[in-house]
Length: 501
Image (cartoon, rainbow, N blue to C red; front, side, top):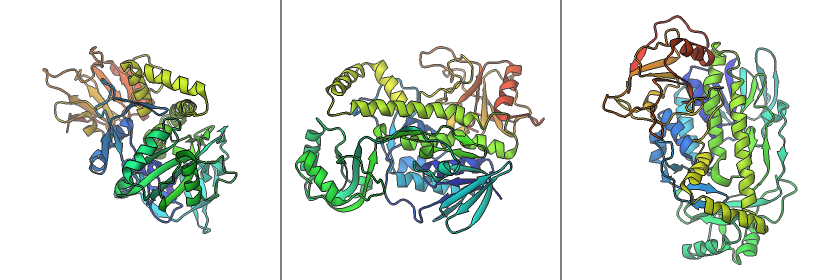
């Protein structure tokens, strides 16, 4: 019996597998597709996901195969300049094709010891008090202590676990395809610019995934397909292009044709016993704002260390349930802003056009632009830990230390105590939490100083996902928070590390 079976080898499942392996959890990833993704669905990492990759030492690989972009307040088709003063050391996103993201995350997970089996479809599961039995399409039976469904919006795991998926069905659909065209680029982009004045669900991106002459084209479909399994055809694409643009650009040689709707749904719960959900298996929404892949990767980042602690037997009571408690509201918030964006992008409603114009003017104010950008990039997330201190519950941005940077200390996925007092101790938790005492030169700025230049707290406890679990200087309070997030102490001699060491 393995520790955890992850169903789905996309970005969410592969990120989760790597996080679990950091803590020695035996992981098996089952992917239905026999071959890796050859094209890209999601095409970007927002600022918080960039931070996540940096926290695990993966950012260099992404930077080598991506381009940075800086679009602030991208909401409902409204583009604004990147705002100043955003609370991150990574004020940009990355245009990373999804197949590159998957390759980089797979390489990491496998290097850490995860097993990936392609061409394996889950068709049945049963769980009891000690584990989950999984049945595959070829008749194979497997057993694991826990199972996580990362198998997309039509999740088999979610259905088999009996988890409800309420929400709203699609009312409109959009065609999406990668294809070549005979029209020259200037003609294509000129037509796109004109059509988007009245139809925001129309567009074309040239040289997709570095393939010269290959365009990714989106155009409204003619209604909603009764059967989502009905294949999209090139003839249908050409017909809709002519209907909206007066030309089909001479589209030919499609590499991929698909359709997506504006359905919005969220799982009623992210955990049912020993079965959990993450990524699109837990929530679906239109791709407006490019939030889907990022939301899933961040689900995995939240879940990985908690599930590892549960498998290891050291999780404090309620830790694994905190995955749902923290991530379900985040997913609900993303779904709400997706609803708002779809409303703003309505082309047949004068009210929507008026709202879009009003919001565009409001977003010219720096404070509004920062708010919208923080929401869209997920750097504004604050989990409710029942503490009123403004830092507690938020993730901590990367900061310069005496030697190196904060995120350089987080690659192993352990807790971290940043102790400027020199008096605090993690004795009993040194196998799970590092204590950093050699923070900054006296002449340097306070590393905890807020964006408003107010003095920061004397010590900060970070969870493995980088969110602040406690601030203060009282050892008794620290011990209580260590027990809350990391379980009972082991009675060891608390280790200390130098910043950057």
